[in-house]
Image (cartoon, rainbow, N blue to C red; front, side, top):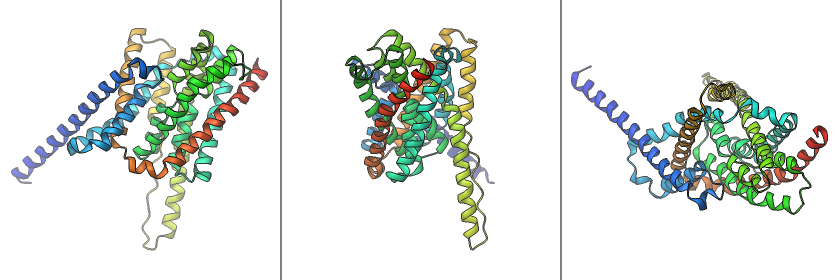
Length: 365
């Protein structure tokens, strides 16, 4: 290799690295602005977390002002939407402890498991069979409703390696129906239409509302006890992210192997297609490890709080980056069907979730 060629290659690598770093810095500054906007009382009062504001603001920029960003920065945006996302989801485990989950015991665990499993099954089936959505969009929409809103969408997006616009549609469902629940549920409870006591309200709110912030916002309008129970039940649902992701990873891998085998069998040129690598979400195991760390109280409270703040910022960066990569034209193709799937899941969470809560209280009360 000539000296000139080597110099050109080195310069190209340095330029690429610089562009990636600039892209990451751009996303970080964007996320900082988003975090500031999300702290405005009017925005915070709606239960809109920085994650949700981030993907909306990112999508606006990505569709209206994308040409203003140098092409070399795209690698940094992609890094934030993929690799940084996995790290941030793992650190999300510091928000959950086994001691808190144990406080609500079997009722809280039963509520969470039944809601998560039923919502995932119904959402995936309705999305794919009735609404004719692709597998990834159906799963992302179901995951956002079943587990923990935008954070679950991010985790599933990373495991499925799906397109950014599919995550945007799922987050849109979380925003719309989660916000509706936050305002509607307290009104229904105070009107006596839910037929639940304070603990039952906590189980119902924590088991069926999409985002953590929305759960706290809704339950705080009932009582401190309801807020405490609702928050723990919600965190139990978050814990279920790990086994669900592992199961989804194995399912995706098995489907890919079947497709690969079928393609190979029908190929006329004799070429074989390598099966897809097992989609094990290692970051989910990292999430579980941090849950254990938090449960053992290894870290001081100040350190945990600081890490949680940084983690929220990292998740906001990931969401903002996904928004920048999202195209409205892609959303338009499946938007109404994805929203209808979210609506069907919302009806299930409200009616079916209420039935599950009554059953759980009758069995364990």
